[in-house]
Image (tube, rainbow, N blue to C red):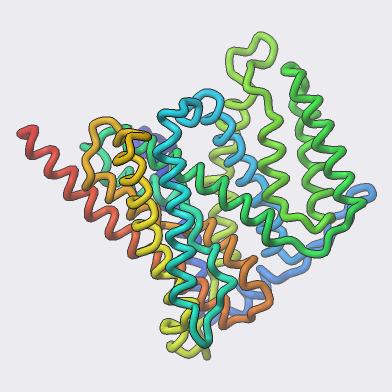
Length: 396
């Protein structure tokens, strides 16, 4: 009997969020322990993958970031397509509020970060770090206190997070790429074209699609373009319809099949390889560095101001209504949770501060950790209070 609640828990967003934060804590502990040399030797160990004409040597950390994380972006792309065609993003009326709020949630953090880093010693390149919301962490935090809150808040948060993740992917594609190798880029284009043609064949064996996905990823990796774009592009070619006589749509099959591996494998492994920072010899004044303070302020202040301000403007002008049954206090609590930027912020920050050394990486992790923790704590406190007040008004 004790097994059932455990299985149910693992199916929730809270389960994925706990796995993610546990991996980050373990990484930080190892990086600042007597085994730190072994930890860094592991994540910096070179691995060579050769298959046919493809041969690439990267560190374990880079394989996770540039290889496995493409699977995460593939799942994000599936969620985006599902919501656009069948879900919350399919209705312009429902779409307006979360999308405009997501836009505000990208502009607000960028402006706050730039304001903090405008003076001497500032690191202006870090402005995109606060642009995205960590879906797993934000939904996990909401799940902890959301029992008495309307389901519309969860849908609003999910849609907003998907929308600003899409914006973050666009920023990654526009801002971060190495030297472009056009022959490989052409190969990636041909692979994508093949997947588009395959999308018209719902009954296509899954092996065919998998070969197409891997080929697209391999060409994209060698082309110098960030593989996150390949993940999203591949997802958009997955058919929404069912495969033959099977009742389950192809897109939903991929989402359901990959979600556990991403939530409990890919994302924790990414956190384990990126979040480990040794603070030995790193001066504590990094906590007062413009980059660190800018990230904290962007996530905790800029995100809530941008999301709530844009939502207020959207509702005030009549473009949309508040999520069904919700209050302004509850909407504010959700805006606070949007400041949890852990996974996507680490991913973007690693690109923005590439080549900055250990000090820059320590500033990045410290800023993201503090900003996300403040946002989570404040959001849970506000929503917990709102839930208790709602329960009291019902007399329960």
